[in-house]
Length: 421
Image (cartoon, rainbow, N blue to C red; front, side):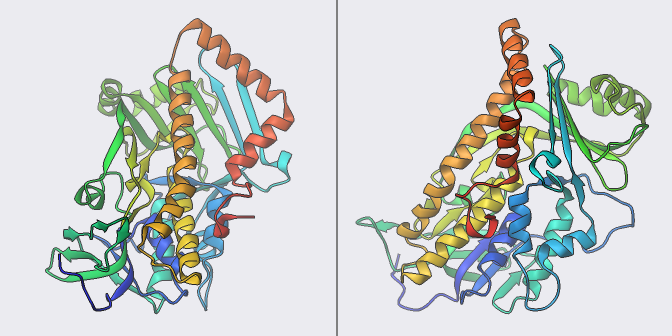
């Protein structure tokens, strides 16, 4: 490849303008960078009043702080715009085991906090971020656009050659940048083009997602029951309904999807032990395949992966989007450090700082979620006794519960600057 002697048109080129990719562009805006974002389709801009999309996330306090700090020169912050569009706080969480009956209860009041997090439609988060980017003079949005070819430089004696990352779009346009970021999801095209391998496995499970109405109020509480076939979660929505996420085997998923509404409501009632009374209504149901996946490495010269392109986690704790937003915030910090020190944005000195900061935390979360899944899906009497003892002890130790809640809220001191208290 010929070494280029001209400046690329962009400093930062982000492939994927979903929640994580858009958050990275917003976090880097205003820092003197030329930024471009490619996305296959524009976000949904309006929807019928009262309609709630099936694709939701449980955003942590750390994610909320990041979104609060993304504030344009005029108008509301990204988070304030999301509140206008609709978010659903949850203040408590109740978790119990289907075998052995142990349980644990978390209450935000024990930390003096107003809530434990918010249930937010993915389209709400993406639209608020997209509107921010549309108003940013240093961000170019290329949509609809898909990648057709990707060319990356190769290391030369441990250093990056002076050539750039080059992306050819499906309409023939050619883009180049100092740094290209893959934020294009679990089945990342960028990752595949870069030849980056992943480790992990399919869980041979699917997550059934639907919205239900229950006869008893959810009381702004997230409910989760661990069954041996997988967890069932009720996530509270602002209109009084709950979004359920029910992880089951693939055969069980097919059977549940084939049921009529009345029969499905009965299955949900039985699986939840009617903690919220009877299920009086159910909306559309979809099933999503579950997989644990981790990229190795996250970075190459002039390339970085963030979000699901770098890691995919079991949804039992709803941490996938939060991990991706922390990736975005950390990479924004490290790019700012590179600018301050005159370092190459796409050089390995910069990118390995990001990888070191995020890889360990992401691995720990992937391991913890996989461990919880395997622990609570096992009917071995010794494991049942151990996990029930653990839940019971944790529930009776307020300092331990406060520590667990603080960790989930994102109150650690080692967070990226935009997410830090």
